[in-house]
Image (cartoon, rainbow, N blue to C red; front, side):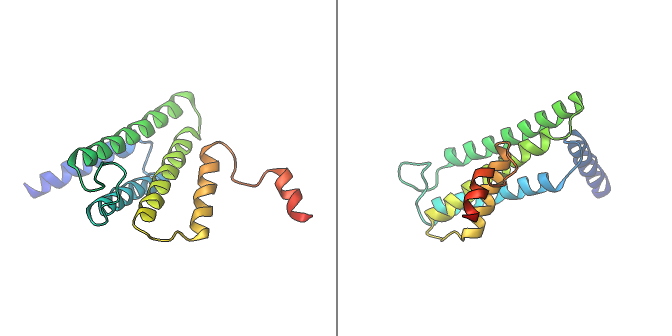
Length: 152
């Protein structure tokens, strides 16, 4: 029985990975950030009672459920991006979607940390800004006019 369960779980995992065009570092990062965001949201609400999702700032099952549903829909959107990429013969759609959603999750984690009174280091904020720019379609580098101003 144990072998059958392990085989079934392995087959299901392989099927999911195949649907997503293979499991990449980006998908691993997205899932890890989703878990961290959910955990920090629970801590902000459950321990610090500073959640902006409820009127009293505490835990509420409906708010938690909505968060999980949103994360599932995020993964569905990444799946759509992946399948459109395969259909159109492109190579950037899934990665762009993953970077955009990673940025959103990272920002949410930073917001949750701020709600708990945790200071955010400058380099972390800068890295999130680079991700935000990449998700918006720029390469994350400073525009040419900003580079010129830096040399003055």
